[in-house]
Image (tube, rainbow, N blue to C red; front, side):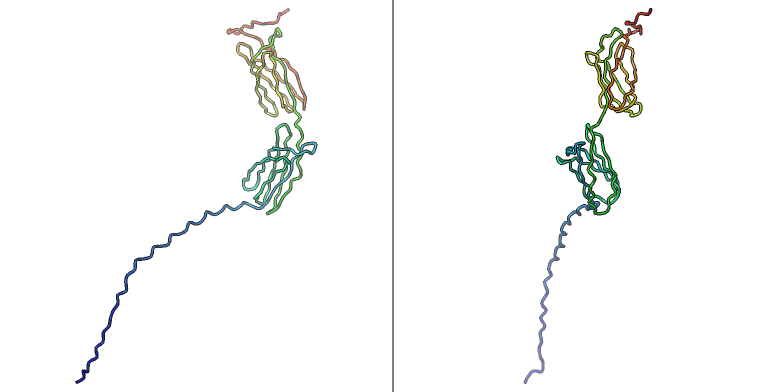
Length: 222
């Protein structure tokens, strides 16, 4: 007799549990490259009075957003500044032995501005020189001398040599006060009015004193 039952079987296959995948390690992002403050350029040349290029002229540029930069001219007298934002700038050229020159510049965005060739003239200055002597006319050495310009406020110091000689150079037109000091001598002071490019010779007289302040060298009183 045939069976009326049908057998069925269900097989369950377990799905294996996989370990979690590691989180991807983020790649380091490169540091952003600083962007230029602008795309403008200022350039030019510096010559002397004879129109020959001047090398090693100090060029300073100040302006927009507290910008301040400096450079020097090359053997062709050439200089340039780049990455400049639009705005107003002041350019100054200076070199020892020459008078400085300056120019104001208004720069547009992305403009390449060529400065008119700057001509630096040789600086014309004056000199004060002379001797420090006692009242007998003998030189006094190692006297400390200090010079000050009343208008220019220029200050300089030097000392007299064994012949009492001293010298102050590179002086502009002004009235100068010169003070002379040396131990056991009364301080001396004199003033000199100097014109442009003038040279003047002067003599400073100093009296020697004792510790009590008595003048040892004195002129005869008639």
